[in-house]
Image 1 (spheres, rainbow, N blue to C red):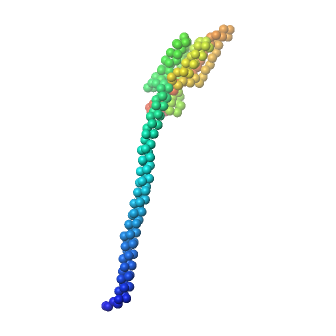
Image 2: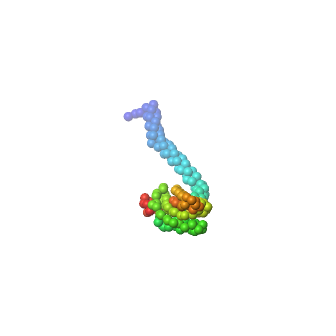
Image 3: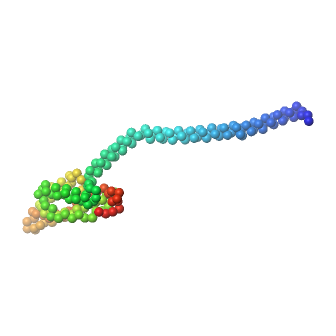
Length: 191
């Protein structure tokens, strides 16, 4: 079979077109797609790297904040009642109240430990105390409670006159409440 020059040219152009088509579809297009995928992956990794670098650069700030928070936590913990159990914390508070009352020559007529109650992460430990005194000593006693290093509140205070004719002496009944950090085993329990 003889092929004319013209047919050879057409066949050659057709073969080149098919070869060009195959090279574009199976070599150049996949190469361009893989380059685009690599570029997108690189951009994502660069963004992630920048995010991590920002976190690393903020490490000093974060460590300072953490140290500050630890100091504040330590300061707050000093204001809480100590003890391994709520009962021991109540005993600590009772000793503290006895010490303040002795400072002013007051005698605690009765001390009653009430049930502890949950208040968030804390247990409130209330003690009801009763004493007989005069108003000036009562004022000093309450002022010392307010200045105390422990965080104490007085949710209930009742003052009554012992003798209507001689109102110098008064009977003071008050509830003093301190706060105790719940331990993991104490959470959900009452003292």
